[in-house]
Image (cartoon, rainbow, N blue to C red; front, side, top):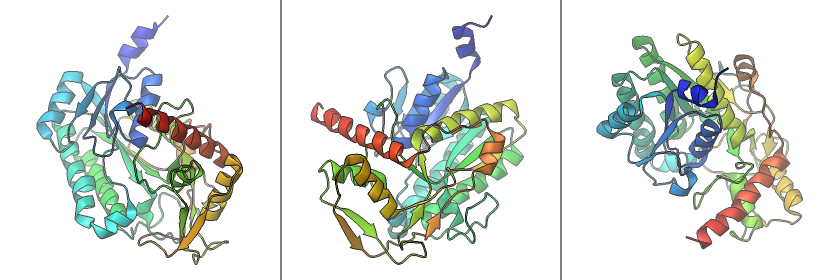
Length: 342
């Protein structure tokens, strides 16, 4: 009979970059809950120390610091990387493209190089549906044409290309997970979206519901969608984190195979549908301000999740818009308490 400690020791240590951030911190929770040894590197520019569990080592530093990353790999004998560190605001990427090519592409190249030098065999990358640009058809499959319409999408697609080429030249396999719209929070309220001034619609809406914002801006009502507002496929952050753990297991089981997969539910909701759901969950009406389109926003992004469902034993537990909103709301209330006590 295998003991719990033997099972735990059999699992290799995972370096989570950006593990103090929104999605990264949920991956750390998912790994820890499944008894994977974890270590985090985060420069804490947008991450939060409180988001990392006390038992998880946290290195405050940059993934571009090759000496530090090499030290972490060696000290903890890391055999896998989950790479979340980067910049994620689409309109900002249009205004400041070089920031995104540096943070998301140049720094990823340094991290990949450090992983190759250390002989790290498995690499999971936080990619995005923005790699597809304006999709030619919906829902979007992984084989859909890739033509990003903003520097954010290009910066991520370039990193996917680097990983693909690196995997051919070195003893490393990878999984690129293309996220659709990530939302919600840990059901036990251990982590959530904590960034001040965040642009995620559900985050903004629950802040407005709690009086932290005066209104919610609706950017554009002239999209080619049923109600004229942008349609997105919202995925619960904990379901996404679970997919990362399963992807890691798949890479270890078949080291000659790499994977690129969409992460979404295959169901889209418009901006107005999301705001109606927030009104419903909170039993109040949020003030909505109609504004012009933002640069770089496509009409509709909805995933075809067939490949991830076929490749992994992934069974989403929170694929319900009202549940996603309820968890985001609970975290927003807890975040108020955290900030009042610090």
